[in-house]
Each structure stands twice: as structure tokens, then as C-alpha cells.
View 1 (tube, rainbow, N blue to C red):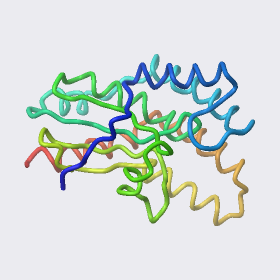
View 2: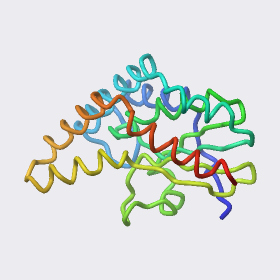
View 3: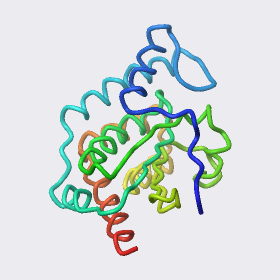
View 4: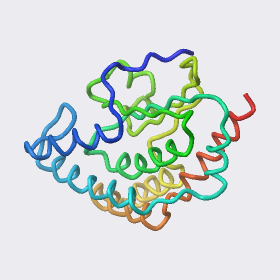
Length: 197
């Protein structure tokens, strides 16, 4: 399946600048504007900045990506207020820099509903969604919106009756403890599966 990439897309630097410019105007990315989304976005800029400075991929993942031979296009569907996106995007960006054959662009979910609708998760417009395309823009894989271990954690908390604020707090505590080990493991599996193509 060949994928048409939305024409309105951003580099990582442009994406960060867009978020910062909107924050200065008291706004956020996306269709909805609210004080809560504004606060989430402010928090997310700190999360991304922290991972930009502290994340280091493991040696196996570095080797897998550095040795990849053919061009890849990575597309990440996101919004600035999305907490999961703030956790994953700095990792994706840093991994893309390990191999000059990889390019990565960020697209906003609410600006691109038709594109988003191709990559629903159980019928929902969940983000972030990371899409990998080959040099002919043929679809290789989709990942997202969070590692399976985090999915299981949220489901368990929901089953236990935890409210949404508590679930979010526990999720981000899990991210801090896990330090992207679960995410890296899933990326390694995807790369291993598709390296034989």
C-alpha cells in the first residue's frame, strides 16, 4: 500500500517551534482550545526537552538502525498536548539521526483527518502514531500510541477503578521508571521483522 504524505508537515525543530509560538499566544495545536490542554502542552515541552537531553538508545538498537541499508521515511502523527507523544517523539527523532537514509516528518492529527483515519487504533484517533514507509512510500509498519506494557498498565488501572487523572499520573511515572526500555524492545522487533524484506 502506497501512502500519500500530507503536504503540511514539520521537521522536529519546526514542530517544537510551532508549539512554542502557539503557547506564547495562549494557544495549542489542534481543533480544541482549553486551559487544560494549555497546561498539558506546557508540561509536554518540558518532557520533550528532558528526553532530548537524557535519552540514549541501547547498543543493539543503535546497531540495527545504523546498519539499515535502504531509505526510510518516518511519519509521526501527533499533537502538542498529547502526553504519550511528548514521551515518544524525542526517542523517534534521536533514532532517525543514527542513519542518514532515514527522514522523519511530523503531521498534526487534527489538520489531517483523512490521513489519520487510515491509521486508527481500535476505531479511535489515538496518537502518537509512527508510520514507516520504504523508498517507494510503501507502508512497512505502524506503531502506537504507546508500548504494550503501558497499554496493559492503563487497562489494569481502569479495571481497578482508578480515575483518569490518576491513570495519567501512573502512566507518566511508568515512563520515567521504564526509561523507554519497552519502547526500544518493540522498535527492535519491528526492525528485525522488516530487515529481511
